[in-house]
Amino acid sequence: MQQLGHTRSHSARNYLLQTPDTFVRAPLPGMERATAIVHIGPAAGASFTQYTAEFEAGGVLGPAAAQRFIYVLDGELNIDGQRLGPGGYYYSPGGNAVTATQPSRAAVIEKLCQMNPNAAPPAQFIGSESAVTPMLLGGDPWLEVRTLMPADPSYDFAVNTMTYQPGATLPMVEIHVMEHGLLMLEGGGIYRLGDDWHPVTAGDFIWMGPYCPQWFGALGKTPAKYLIYKDWNRHPLDRANESSNR
Image 1 (cartoon, rainbow, N blue to C red):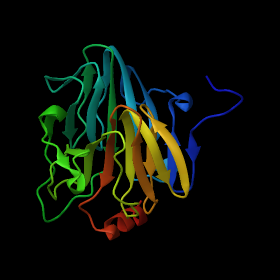
Image 2: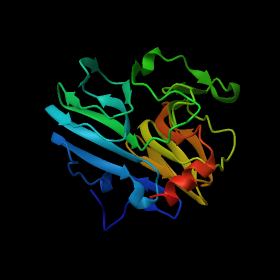
Image 3: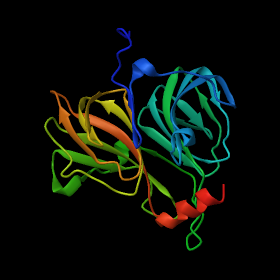
């Protein structure tokens, strides 16, 4: 409950921190017995949309015209006859429909595809985070990365999970052309965003625009983990040309 209008949420020119006390729920077109918390979209300057879909048993998320990535947070989803539990994920270049077999939540990322003329069209796939071999970021045994999208030029974005042991940090302040959508899954810590420092915890969402200075350090007695999106595999001029043609 908010106290006299106080919140950790913060909106700046090139980043957004959205905390659960400020979440607003509303159904999106094609949803039945389901609702969405839209975290970020083009209205705020992002080139993608990310939302949390909350389903009743039997709830439906209809098809989408854009490519879609879904990561199951809890419950179970039925996608093309395959059932995905927590940590299961699915990518479709055409945004196929999804049905919940029980009360469920999922992180959903949707983006208009920037096709690569020198690569095959992106292909649908399904996976489980637990089956992905972790990599150590910069060789740090306290910071694991699991890559959920293929490292293939057909795909114009990446989705990873990153797990920090208590006290682990990013090795540098990053400033780059890519933008991020980040959902805190477990634990917490401190995030530098621009020139500001924010405590973050499980359930928080962060959008980082291009060239936003960013850094994270995990605090507490349990690991911190987040799901993170980034655009990649395309030349920066591709985005400029796409924007000018809208």
